[in-house]
Image (cartoon, rainbow, N blue to C red; front, side):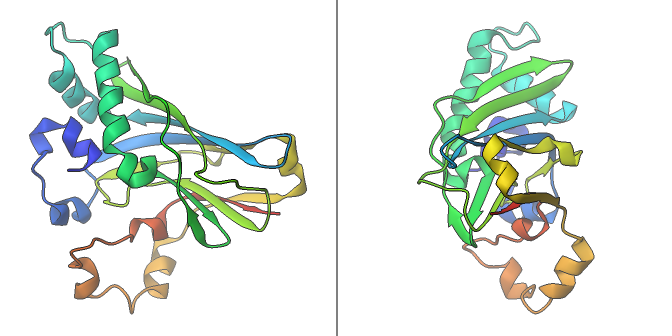
Length: 213
């Protein structure tokens, strides 16, 4: 089971094939990549704001006292569910170092809030290994199952934090869908989409912060 279907009981039995067809849940994301004074990536700060429809479904599922809101203990339960469910997917946070994927460590907590009809999640993850500002680094947020669309509304929502980044070039990259499809046309066969081990097609289209030092 995926994290988002786990929270939305009404769609919990959705098949992987259907999930790949198009996103069912939409979230606005913000990612701050922090470098310490030692020139190492110290942490990545995530903020996600979910669409109102999905947020309402979470209220229905976790509002145990039926007061039409999420109390502190209910918000904590949502966070606990996410903390356990997303570990397999590195909390939708992707890091590469010269093309090599760097896993993230499990965060201590997923903080959850509910404001103005929308569910918010904010948490910090750290690279699973020492990561100096060296070579070509990329950072992003995406759901490899394509069930959720994680969108950066503005380039300002992907931020490099820390004086050490001044020695590096960094830019937000938003891949052009037509170019991605053209460049990967030979790979996008029926076998690709029917691979029982799953695909990582979303990564090709995901917005990312590229840092070159």
